Each structure stands twice: as structure tokens, then as C-alpha cells.
Image 1: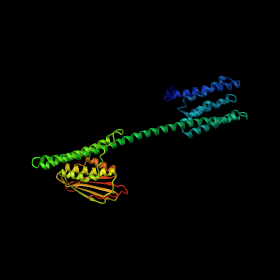
Image 2 (image 1 turned 90 degrees about the vertical axis):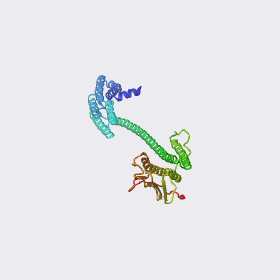
Image 3 (image 1 turned 135 degrees about the vertical axis):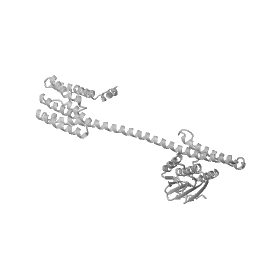
Image 4 (image 1 turned 135 degrees about the horizontal axis):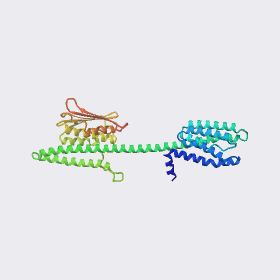
Length: 394
């Protein structure tokens, strides 16, 4: 209920200021009535002066500093027309509190200092005497206390607002990071599916064509082609199973046991292309080093996709694969001497995937037609610093 009332007042500042003015009058009226009774003076005069001094509080939210000046001026007038001693000026205290919570700290304390000087000077002039000195000097504490309370409330509100803003920003950052990771994971899985499907379907299609051509004239070789189709299909299913395993939720069965492909399986990959009718020549240079798993997979997939494009687009051709280990970098080059551009236009999903894979490990990739005929793909992938050497395969 209280929270509902606060929200209702928050969206209606005029009603809030009116409520504050009435509260100031209600709180100060008994004190002033007791003071008037003690002085044997008119209670109604005290209450009228209090009511007049509370009127400016109705617009304290819109004009806090002018309202504070008005209440201080009315308090000085009250000193002049009422006998001493009197209670502290309640309306001026409420006005200075409003200045402190609605302006900056410097403005609040300057306004408070001016009010303290004005009220104290007026009290010392209009109510002289040693007996009145404690009450007159107490006005300094009264005004500064009002400013201090307002400043503390404003600081607390700013602190809470800052904490809420940081929490909201952190929440937005977490959501953006989660969306970014989901997008990256989706793109990674899409690249894997594209590379696996495109490569194996291309080989199966080529081997099926060979089997169909040799079925009547050379059944033995046709049978061998069918065996390769079987092996290629099995390999495709294994890789698809491993890739689809990436889509499992954290609470499901662990990911497939098949290891991710890498350069250790490069010879088998090239043999599969050779059996499908593509002539492939491999050249290794440099001393091989141990690769990070992601770099190993990236190198394998780039060579696989490049040869798949050559097989699909270059026609009768010879592909050259160069694998070079240098200081801190692995250089991959796949080029062919086929007709036109072995990589097509270079804007398909496979080409995009190769560029993304290279960038993901901090490397670069370039692709384009060779002078005369053929197509060339060149990638440079960073090697880990201090990577251990391993034996070079024959």
C-alpha cells in the first residue's frame, strides 16, 4: 500500500509538493502553538505566519532555489513580527532539503550557507541579547542539517541508480554475449555440416559415376568403386554423427567418441580424392610441429573444401597441395590447373566457411584464379609458440 502511494505521488510532483507543504504545517503547528502559549501571544498569528511560509513549498520541485529564498525571507519577516524566542524555521528546512536532493552538491551547500548567514544575521539583529545567542547560533546547525540530510538522500539515490544501471548493463552484456556465442556456435556447426556433406557427397557422386561406367565393361573395378562408395558413406555418417553431437544439450549423453579430423588423416583424404578421379600431388616442407586441435581441424577442413571445389568445378585437372611449416606459421596452398576457376566464383558457402575458419584461429586466407587457368587457395595459420617437434611423415 505504501509503495503504491509513493508511486502515485512520484508521477504527480504537484501533489507531492502539496503533501509536503501540508506535512510541514502539521509538524510545525503544535510547536508554534506551544511557543505562542508560552509567550502569551496569539496562537492564530503564529499559525498564519507558518501557513504563509509553507505556501512556497507547493512549487519546490519546479523552483527549489527560489522557494528556499522565499521561505528564508518569510522566516526573517516572522522574526520581526513575533517575540523571541521562537522555534527553528520549519519551512526553510524543508526547502533547503529540496534544494539538496534536486540540485548538485555545490549549489546545495552554497544555498545552505547563504540561508544560514541570512537567518543568523537577521536573528542576531532582531533578537539581540546573550540569552538569545544559543538559539540564534543554532540556526546555523538547523540549516546545514537540512542540507546534509538532503545531500545524503540524493547521494543514496544516485548510488542506487548507479548500481541498478550497472546491473542492467551487466545483464544486457550477458545477453549479448550469450547471443554472440550462440551465433558463433551455430556458424561453426554450419561450417562443419557443409564441409562434411559437400566433401563426401562429391566423392560418392564421382565414385558412383565410375561404377556406372565400368559396371558392364569392367565389373571388378566397378565393384571396387562400390566398395569405396560404401567406405565414403560410412565415413560421412561417422563425421555427421560427430558434428550433430555438438547440438546435444549439456544434460544429454556425452558427445561422440570419434576424434575430430586433422592433418594426421591427410593422406587418407587425398587417397579418397584420387580414387574418385582427381589427381592430387602433395608437397611437404619444413619440420612439422604439434598443432592445437582447432588449428589442426582448420587446416584439414581448408584442404578438404579446396579439393572438393576443384573436383566439382575444375574438370579434368591436377591439384597440388603444399603444406609448409615455417617459423610460427603453417602455410597451406591448394591450386589446380583445371579449366576456368576451380573454386567457382569464390563466393559460395564453402569459400565463406574457409575464410571464417582461418579468421577463427587468427590466420588469413586468400583465393583467386591463377594466371592463365586454374584456381589457387592460400592460407596462413599461426602456430603455437614453442610447439614441440614431431616426426615428419613420409
